Image (cartoon, rainbow over all chains, first blue to last red; front, side, top):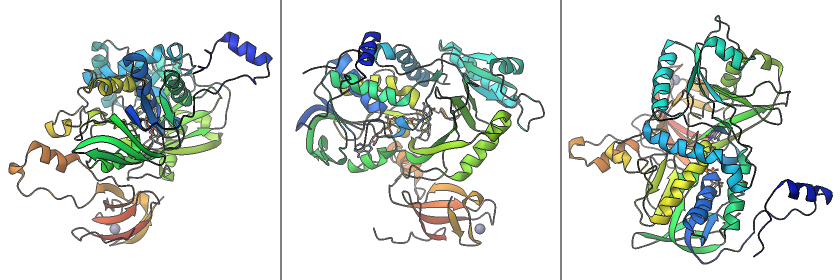
Length: 419
Length: 93
Ligand SMILES: Cc1cc2nc3c(=O)[nH]c(=O)nc-3n(C[C@H](O)[C@H](O)[C@H](O)COP(=O)(O)OP(=O)(O)OC[C@H]3O[C@@H](n4cnc5c(N)ncnc54)[C@H](O)[C@@H]3O)c2cc1C
Ligand SMILES: [Zn+2]
C-alpha cells in the first residue's frame, strides 16, 4: 500500500512549484472489515491517539477507529487548547506530565505540525486565600518535579502588559502562578496528525460510522453494531466524551458522569497583544490569542445536563464582564463566533481510564472540561490498557471502582479553573 | 436561556434558578446493610440520559423552594414542573 511521503521543507517547495496540486490524501477511506483485534469507538483526539500508540508502540495494527461524524468534530475540535500539567495530586501529575512530555516531541514524532507553543499558562489569584492556595499547589507541583513559578503583581504586569492590575478593581490581582512549559496547540492538527500516523501504520479510520449497539455474549463484549454493519472485535474501547453515558447504557452499566454544554467564543482578529494564556478561577474566564489574531475566551460550563452543543447566554454575559475588567482594551472588540461541546464531567473532576463491568470492554472518559491537554498521555496509557488488558501504572488510579472504594482523585478547582 | 415555570411563582428566567441535578434518587433506607458497591451506585452513578431528564431546581432568587422539572436534554424543552415528592410525569417518546 502506498504511504504518503513525509512532510518536509522539500515537499513544501516541490508542491509550491506544482501549484499545490500534488498533495496526497492524508489517510485512506477504507471499508469496515468484519473482524478486528481492537475496535476504538470515537474518533476524537483521545481515540485516535490510542490507535496510534497501539500501532506504533505495541505493534497491534488490526485496529479500527469508529467515528459517527468527522474526525475531531467533538470536543477535540471545539476546545480552547490550553495545555498544562500543574495539577495538585501525584496521580494527576503523573498522567498530565507524561502527556506534557509527549507534547514536547509530538510534531517531530508525528511528522505533522501540531503548532504546540509553550507560551506559558498564568493562573491569577484575587485574594489572600487564592494566594495561599497557589502557594500550597505550587509546592506540591514542584515536589513532583514539574515547573511552577509564582509572580508578584508587578511581575504579572511586566509579563502581560495589557492586564489591569489596578488595586481598585472589584477583584484585584494579588499574584499569579505560572507554568512556563504550558501553552496551546492546534486542536484539529492533533486529531489529523494522530489519524495520519495511525492510518500509515495500518489502522482503519472509519468516519460517518455510528455505533448503535454493543454486542455481548455470556457477559462479554464481542463486537458492535454500526450504521455500516456488524463488526466483531477481541477488545473494545469506548472514547466518546459527552456520549459516554449513552455508550455505557448500550452495554448495560452506569457511569458517575453527567454531560453538560461548555462553550467558548472568539473575537475579531487583532494585532498580537497577548503572548500567553491567562486564567482566573475566581472571576471565571480564561483567554489566549490565536495565531490568526482572534482572542479565544472561555468560562464555566452550563449548570444543567445537555447534549445540545449550545451554551447559555448568561455564561457569556458573566465571562465578558470578567474579561473586560481584567483587560479593558477588549471593551470595543466585536465577538465573532461562539460554539459549545458536550463535556463528560466526573464527580472528582478526574478521568476514568480502564475496565468496565463488561469483560473485554474498556472505557476512557470523564476528561470533562480539561482533557485536550491529556490527549497524547491518555492515548498512550489507554493503548497499554487495551494491548495488555491491564492498566499502566499511570492510569491504574483512574478506575471506575474508585467510586465504590472511595479512592477519589479530587482535582476540583485544580489551578483555579477547570481547563 | 430557559424559561422555567416555578410551581409557586410562575414563569421566570433561568438565571433566578439553581439546577440541582437528577431527581428521584432515594436515600437507601438501611445504609448500614449496603455494600460499598451499592453505596457507590447510590452516591455517584447517574442516568445522564440523552432525552427526557427529571431534575431538581431551586428557585434561589424567588421563593427559595425546590421543585422538579421534566426537561429534554437535546431540545432543552421544559415539558412539566411539579412539586417535590410527586412521581415524574409519563412522557411519550
Ligand atoms: C468549549 C470547550 C473548551 C475546552 N477547553 C479545553 C482546554 O482549554 N484545555 C483542555 O485541556 N481541554 C479543554 N476542553 C476539553 C477537551 O476538549 C476534551 O476533554 C477532549 O477534547 C476530549 O477528547 P475526546 O477525544 O475524548 O472526545 P471528542 O473529541 O469529543 O471525541 C469523541 C468522539 O466520539 C464520537 N462519538 C460519540 N458517540 C459515538 C457513537 N455512538 N459512534 C461513533 N462515534 C461516536 C463523537 O462524534 C466524537 O467525535 C474543552 C472543551 C470544550 C467543549
Ligand atoms: Zn418560586
